[in-house]
Length: 140
Image 1 (cartoon, rainbow, N blue to C red):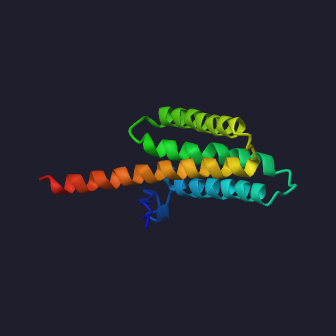
Image 2: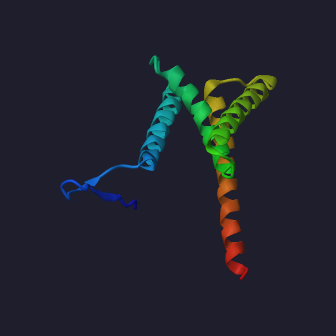
C-alpha cells in the first residue's frame, strides 16, 4: 500500500495532498499494460480495427523493453530507457529473422515468441533477485 504525503500550507493551516512525481508511475505502468494487452488480443482475434497495428507495435516494443529494463536496474534512467528500447528492437528483429528463416512467419507467432522471451527474461531477473536476497540474509 502506498502512503500519501501530507503537506501543510503556512497561510491557512489546512492540510492538502500533493501528488509527487513518483505517484503516477504505477498508473502509467498499468495503462501501458492494458494498451499492450489490447494490442495482443486484437491480433489474436484477427480484428479489422484500425488500432490493431499501432497497439500491436506498442506491445512488441513495450514487452521486451520492460523485461530488459528490469534486468538493467543499476543504470541511470535515461540510459536504461535507451538500452531497453534498443534491446526490444533487437529481440523483435531476431524473432522475425528466425521465423522467416524457417518459413513460419505469422503475426500471432511473433507475438507468442516475443511474449515467451520477455516472460523468460523477467523470470530470470526475479529469480536472480530472490537468490541475491537469500544469500545476503545468510551472511552476517
